[in-house]
Each structure stands twice: as C-alpha cells, then as structure tokens.
Length: 580
Image (cartoon, rainbow, N blue to C red; front, side, top):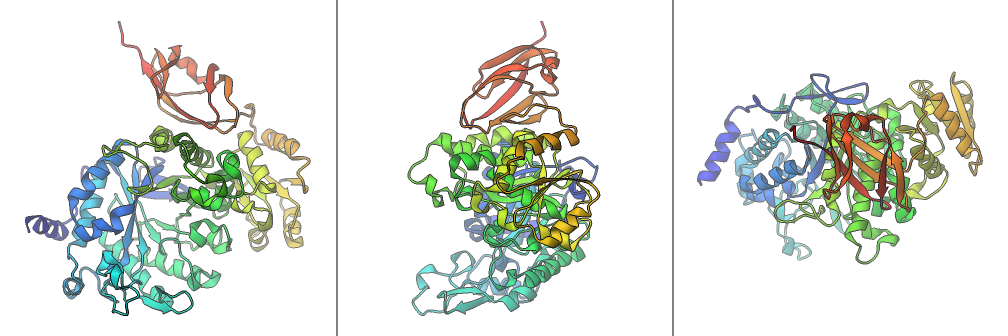
C-alpha cells in the first residue's frame, strides 16, 4: 500500500527535469544533436520486460538494478516497449480520463502504470540514459496475460478478459489480429496523448511510430504512408519539439518487401528511420563470413535515400538459429563475432543509434549485470560509438542499383560485392539509391559527390535521369569486371588517400575499438590515431596486456605493430604513467 501511494504521488507531481545530465535532442542536416549543437549517438538496448512482467507488477525495484547495470555497461539509451492497452484501455479513454481507473480495475489490473513508467523514465535520465517509447503490442489479444487475460482460456470458448478492444478474429489464420479501422483511428490518438504527457521531457529522445514491426493491410504503400503521417503529426501537435522515429514494414527490415514508403517517401514530420535487423533472419544467404564481413553495412545503405537519421531499433543473436549456417550450439567467440560485426559495420556506415535485443531476454549476462557469452564485446564499443561523427545522411557517395540487385538475405550478389569493396577501401558511409527515387525526384542525387551506378536491371527512365545528372557517374556492368578500378577512381575523386584495410576502428578519447572483418589473422603495423592520450604511457588491450608504450602523441600518426585473430573485437585503452 505504501509503495502504491508513493507511485500515485509521483504520478500527480510535476515532473522534475532540473539537474539531469541529459539535454533535449534535435535533428539538423540528418544528424542527431542536443540543443547545444553537440552530436549525440544513442548506444542502447531494448527493455524486454517493460511491456511484460514489469507492467503488471509496477514495482520500481524491478527496473532500478537493471537501469544501473545498463548504465554501467556503457549504454546511454533504451528502447522501451509498451502495451498500448495500459494507455488506452478503451477507445478514447486515457490515464487522465475519469473512467480510466475503473476500467483497469474491471480487468483486475493495477492502476499505477503512468506513475511506474514516469518513474522509470526519470530514473533513466538520472543515470544518463535516453528513452524511446514504442507500442510493442496493440490491445488486440483478449487472452494476453500482461493486460488482464488468461492464456489457459485460449481455445476453450471462454471470453477473454484482457484489454483487447482492438481484437478482430481472423478465420484464415485462426487468431486475433488488430482491427485495421480501429488501429488507424486510435493509435495516433494514443501516441499523441503520450507525447502530451511527456511534453518537453528531455529524457524522452523521441517517440516511435506507428508501432513495432508493422505488418498487415495497413502496411500497403498508401495506407502506411497515411498511418505514419497521422501518427507523426499527432506526436508533433502535442509536443512540437518531440522527435519522431519510424519503424519500417516487413519486420522492420524490409527483406521481403521494399516499399518506397519505408525508404525515401517519408512524411516530413518523421525525423528518423528505425528499422530492425537480425542476422539469422536477414542474412541467411551470406554464410557466417559474409555476414561478419559486409551484410549489415550493405543493408544499412538502403535507408540513406531519405536523408534522415537512421538508427537500428533491434538487432542481436536471438534469431541466429533461423540461419542454416547457425545450427546447433555455437561458441561464445562466434556470438561475439556477430555482436562485434553489427556494431562495427553500422559505426562505419554512420548509423546514429543501436538498440540490441534485449536486456533480459537476448543479451547474455550474469546476475551482477556483467555481459557474457559473446555480449561482452558490446561495452567495448560504447565509448567509440557514442563519440562517432559519421552520419549516413551526410554520405558523399551513392550507389544506384535496381531493387532486384540488392542482395536479399545477404546474398553475395552484385550490391553485396560493391558494399564489401567500399568498406575495404574506407569509402563509408555510402547510400544505396533505388531507381524509383531517381525517377520521381530529380534532386535525389544532389547531395552526393560521386555516384556509382550498376547497369543491370536499371529501367530506361532511371538511365535517362542519370545521364542528366551533372556530376561524375561511374558505371558498373554485370559481373563487376571494373569494380576495383571504379573504387580506386571513387577514392581519388573523394580525396581518400589511406590504404585499404580489413580493420574497422572506432575511436574515443584515449581508446580505440577494433573489429577485424577478415577470416585470416592480421599481423602488421597500423595507425590507430587515438586522440586524448597523455604524454607518456602504455597502450593495453581489454585483457590488460601491454601492446605498446611511449609518447602518447605518437599514437595519432605513428604505425604500431598489432596482431588480431580473425573476426575479433579488441579494445585498446591508453594508460598514463604516474608522474615521478
């Protein structure tokens, strides 16, 4: 009773933002910044339990140790899945409606959801963690336990007791699905209410629309565009400064479908794209080496056409067994390669936010919060990722190709090979622009300096549009016989002089994190260009082994010997020597 009273008092009390380490976010020229103009990168995890057990128990003691462990592992953001039923338990009824409490009680549910989530957000902010709320589930399952239902009643003929007013029975699929008419009408209202409730709260980095991994009739091009626009406009109307991030269709990864409405035909009110990528589901044709080498970067390039912020809302190893190459028990080393490859490739591509799935339910860890079983490489990337200044929307290089050449499921076809060569040459980030955008918008390539175009399957209208572009077009033919020559030309035109390397490096002050995207060991000199090193000290890897010692300023330009195992992620940290 005392705990519930405290939660209710927190709900009615005015929010307190003073003294928080976080500042509101904004977007300028496709880059995520705080209101001081400082670049911000969100390195985060998904709070798997925020829409499940936590929602029913509504106990702050559940999230307190988890948020602390998330912060201690170097993450500065969480994606917070929510069940919409807690915020709109009946059409038109929200937590500030007079009938809200009685409706929750009628489902035998606690009534302090808003106090609980407000407290979670406030505590996250105190720990330096941004929050992105999203509707992970709609009120479309009458038997869902986490909003008042009973799973054992399913298929018994009993009426479900959960908050499920959006449920519609699908006879063909033999399950309840969201009523599209209700979803189109009510989801924008609920998102608008959340935006109003958290108005001006700097901890909320943005609100995701329309809901998690949208599928079904509403994801056809015209309905999806209208739905996203309605949701984004509702969020902005309630809080004009609030950022809006859009989940994309087809499990958020667009592996089977590639609608323009998830690539470049995006409502103005949407500030960024928030697709999902699971290597086991979405790179099944690349094999493990192909996945670790280039597939994540290749996929990320598809989202550059809109010129907006791009973040990855979900990724991880939880779906790896879907891939034929990932059957049976896998070693911690192989899992680490997957985690490391994801972060390293997306760091190179100027992705501005990553949210691993999921804290509790996907990221291996111990009871103390220390990550294990391959996930221990994630904290090694925390500082360099947050310090990155790469921006996909500001890429100077574009690759134009037909959607038929886009390397579906990571197949090592033409676009994959181009992506692999560009990463090897250090020509990242780059965007893949599809012909539909070029045909529809004459300025689609205006922001790029160099354009590489693959002739195979390009429609005549796209070829004509490319011929009219007043800039260098480097053409590639089927089979890519001129690929290396083209890449060398692109490097020259872009003023890139560094020698190609299989090593991907992320840098922060006094630290470098390295991923070796190669099946063979690396043994040779490399310039790490680590900034912020003390005058004299030692460079150690994550095991504490001294790799080099001397004058720290030399690490900006002097090659040092380095040995790396295949596909490894290594963290190097500068340790200053104590003054005599």
